[in-house]
Image (tube, rainbow, N blue to C red; front, top):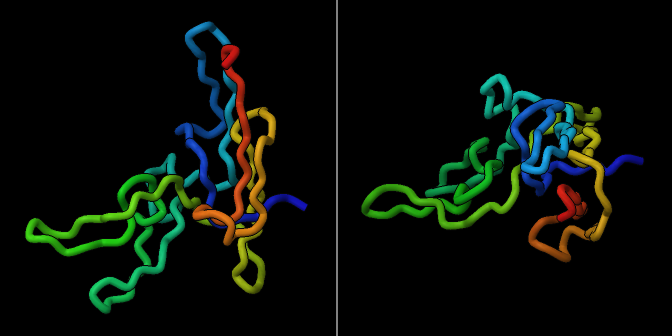
Length: 140
């Protein structure tokens, strides 16, 4: 059974199947981690998974919260709203769902590598379920 998760922590290389040439002329053949390719058409709301937010008693589901960086936990300041919690990954919106709305997307590695860690219990970390894959390029 493929690993099914709503959020994925990984470094995203911005291209569908793509090839990158490294400094030592090693070709890297990279693929997207899911079937969602909306990022390439500039459709952020279709690519990033929204988060449920309750800010100043207003409930919302902003897709921007699925991006990498300071995008979580808004706080009001004299200069406007600032986001105080750093999101260390990106949450990719599911393309395929079952009748109950649960994600069915298969999550793939962006390239060949070796699994070096698996976390199957969401409560054991701040990341939920995740897999760490070591990719070796240019002898790294």
